[in-house]
Amino acid sequence: MQQPIVAGGSSVAEQLREHGLVLVNGLHSREAVLDYARQFMTLVPHRDSGPDSLTTIRDIGQKAQRPGLAGLGAGELAAHTEGTSICEPPRLMLLVCLQQPDSGGEVVLADGREVHGFLADRYPGAVEVMSQPGTAYYGDGGGRPSQIFTRHSGGRISIRFRQDELAQFSPVVQHCLPHLREAIKAQQHAIALSPGQGYLIDNSRYLHAREAFSGPRFCVRALGEPRFPLRPGFGAGGAGSDGRRTA
Ligand SMILES: [Fe+2]
Image 1: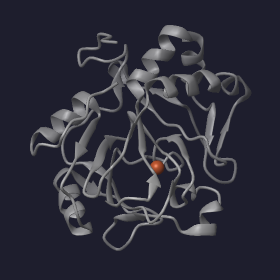
Image 2: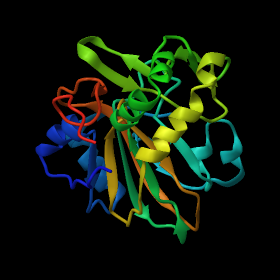
Image 3: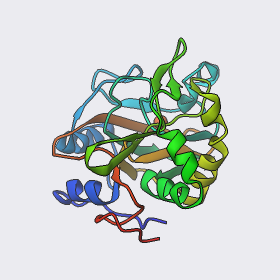
């Protein structure tokens, strides 16, 4: 399990490169979140975002039952990466809690490098299948052809995954999904966010999820592109910046 990391100014870029994750604290307003996000990313608007390009994440009731809107409900949200159905998903995602729910609502994070390493150790054939282009389809109308793991030059690997009604998979990948879910479950960890706390992740590396909740949970989310060089995804071979597995 990855140890929590608290954001520290210029080290944010290094922490994202090394760990893919930065935990943040002390952001108690929408304006503070916006100021913080702008330090590290060029914001990208989302379908549900406001004029400031931030998206309010709260329970909107019945409308959240529509396909692709589960994030705006109060139910459990399965592990996924953001923006799977668009051509180039945003590289960075910042989510900050401004109001805690009465119960539940923990965020659940899984490092794609650890997930990939878990699979490579136990189910190498499944990794191969899930890396074949055009075996996953994300979005409306049959979906955009993609794959769960994308191999880049230099041995880098990125992850793109969702498991709601807007995800379809080729039959051969369907057989691998239980292994992937096992790997995610083994690697994920839950964090209860207090007001002002949140996380910044490399969306090509980290999966995020949410526990069900009750009460007025209120978060804001920023999506964007990094203002600093950031290679895609993670190095193959498990944890460790030099590619060595570190269990
Ligand atoms: Fe999400």
